[in-house]
Image (cartoon, rainbow, N blue to C red; front, top):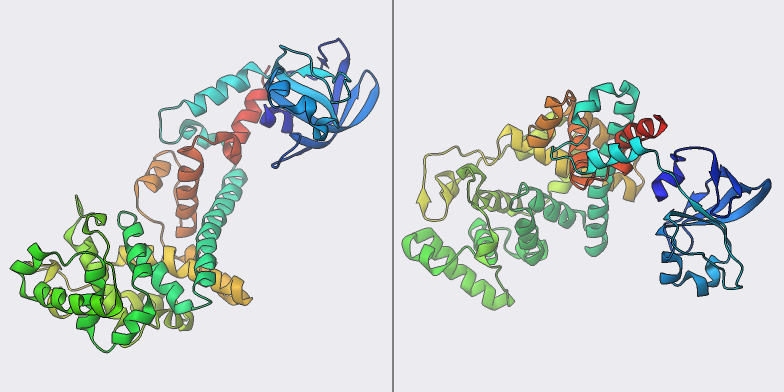
Length: 423
């Protein structure tokens, strides 16, 4: 009802109040997202007299009293009560009766909205996307891309505040989360927060002690594993000593997921990669800031695992596998989800425009992701030409399509507006 009123999608301009007075909407007003009437500063002509004030909208007129508006002076400024069903008169606290209008919604609008919201397809409007003007597509894609980027930047800004401006700690937690690649993201972030850099830096000259701390804190050094693997046994002994020294509490081992996952993506190898960066002191954020090209950035993540992890993908299981910690596609994802947001956040917080520009340029240069969401839009005729575009489609699907927030989507609004204008 608010949406129809805000965008003037009513069935006809010939409207009358429930007591027969002709209504003409000159300005529907400004939507109020806080307490009080639904729309501020509306301008409505009722029987030739122009009224300026607020509008309240309800499905049933009786909701006015049920919500307590009849005794709330904040609603005395309402000049028109707009409803779907007129089942009761409404009054101000002074006892004055408020004009009431039953809003007639175009049948085609209702049908179109029902079709979108109740669609069983992943993308409710997939069959109609080809009818959209090119400009409407590119404008919304651009906005969605920045909407998604800003949500990541906001998380980084909160981290920056929580760590008292320690950018290396921010980078450490952000990278850890993204090395979880969705499935283990929460667990990886919990591990990083539970094992801060200040603790790890005390032992940065010993890769063995770093691994003991990380795998121990991750809850991966259980007695069963240690009993069958000599290295795991050594790690468990070292962690027992360090945990007593620093009063550490490990995570639950059940937090980690490996079901239906390729061995090279197991969290054990991601943790081994983090240990590599911490050895000698974690300074990856500075390296990212100093990198002047995508090639240099990629080189930061082309890490070869050595020692135990060059022949293992989990504790206690040897395997002839690649020593590369990350494949090129995985590096793409790290650049998209870690490096670009870090650049943007750093630029915003420090006031350096060049890093904001670098973040956007990086997303425009990187190839689009290959996942089920991007492929679904491609099947509907909407192909991504960059990571910026694929990030936009991920935002669209997760925040609008999946939630069926079609009335908040620019494309959905176009389809619904067109339906409302059909008589």
